[in-house]
Amino acid sequence: DEPPSSPPPQDDPSVPSTDAEMVCEGRTAEERALAASCDEMLFSNSPNPFTGEGYYTVDSRCLDTSIVGCVGDSGCRLCHTEPETWGGSSSFPKCPQCVCDKWGETFPGACLEQAAQAVEVLGCMDASAENFNEAATVDDGSCVHQAPSSFFDGFQWRTYVNRFAGDSVSGWQWRDWYGNWPASLDGPEMSRLVTRDSGSYLDFWSRYEDPEAWRMLIETSIYRPMAVGSDLITADQVGTFRFDFTAHELAEEEWRCGWTNPQNGAGGGKCEAFAKVVDSTTFELLLFERLETTGAAQSGTPFSLEFELQPAHVGHLIQIGFMNSQVGYAPTGMLYSAASLTRVANNEQPPVLGCTDAGADNHDQAANVDDGSCVFCD
Image (tube, rainbow, N blue to C red; front, top):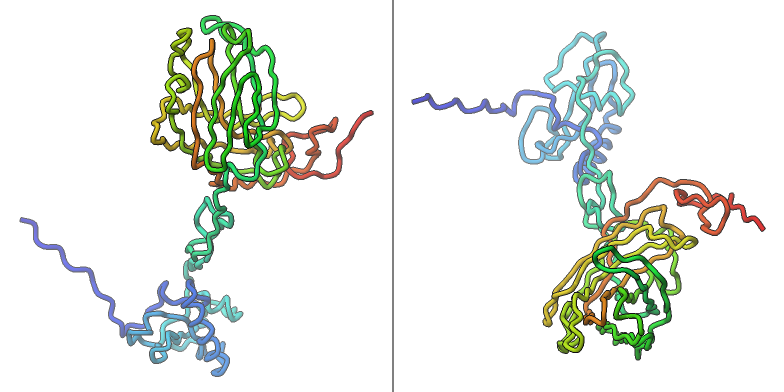
């Protein structure tokens, strides 16, 4: 058997030692308050830099332990500077370097060199909060989170249809589109597309009488922008967002997404949520995040779609919503509820000066701060 290990040596509180517990400015709010009271004592006692007498530090151990140099239970502790030219000695511990730094003591060897103390920085440490502070070391409970926005209230929805020619073997090629019309509360009919927004759910299904729909891939979308009255992304919207919602399978079997149409045998319909960023000039897709909801339970299945808006997206079109696609009149209906859009990270970027107007001849996609340099040719 191995002999039991010896217990670690215990510090003798009567020994005047200088260590990391002796600080000058305070690492916490409590220690900073102590430091202010210790400074008052120092000013009233007029320290003598030549003899090293009268300096105070903060030592929280003095609040409940009697250690050499403690001034009662005040939390203040006397220390002594020992300049090389003095040659004397003291029963008090030698002052840490922070004392010399704080009070301008420049005599060689006056203070004991000490590693820089870690200063507590209060602030919000939650990276998803609006006021996240990267420099904070202690969370002070000040975090502010953007409340999830209601996804159905206050927004004018738009609907449009993309049509693709081809087949599932050789591939589908975009042919044309139509629509992009406002979706009213009662639901517009657009090639028999019906949408209905009640303020608490979105009933979205496709029903076509397009004579060519039986041989084309039809993609129907209903979407909204980030903010009321603005289709373009702004600089303050750069960041990571999460689109949360619940999808419900329809009660009517003939419209359930992914089911087979009993009248013509068409199947394979797909329902999805999406976030798109579209170039405001060329209409090229700059971002396309999608999440399939086909197969959701009638009682509701929760989903989350995360997407990131970059500085290069500023000034371009944003679309967030739901999409159905099918060939040959396949069922593509879905009910959506409990939808919200939440910023989960700011993703703050350094300012990049340039022309941010997408309609200018010298538009700089990398710029996130307009410097007035935009040029428009007639």
